[in-house]
Image (cartoon, rainbow, N blue to C red; front, side):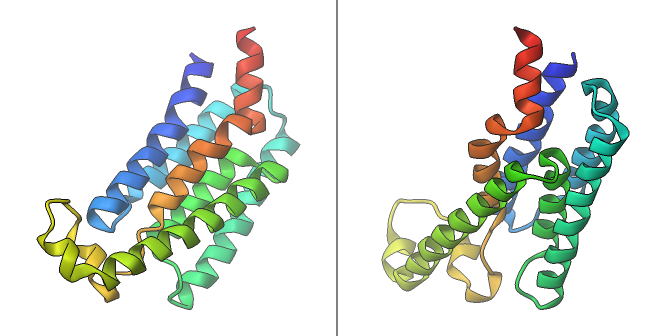
Length: 171
């Protein structure tokens, strides 16, 4: 049951993050709440000690502080900041978190280029049979970075310490 929770909860929440942000430009608060609460419930059963748990909380706090700063400067959306901090709780303080955040940054930059190309070619795309949500055409709508966060999670989570420990317990 514990392994199933580790394999399902985090990826499902990040998939919801990506699709919700892509379709509505909003990330529901419940996604971040579920990520935080489920980690708090799961962590003691993984054999994680109090010090290890503290490092995970520190990672989330530092990411939240950085993201809140970006939010205050109007560089990042509030939903993105909350879900990144909640995701950091699952990765912990270490190389796994750095890889995750670096992947988010690279995919976010790539996503920004795609959105800019969509906006530059909106006259062609609006009459094409390809269905693209209208907020992709609005400059003030911003960039749905939840898509990059979700994809980065899927790419990096299988290499995280928490996920690898769950795989080892299966063997």
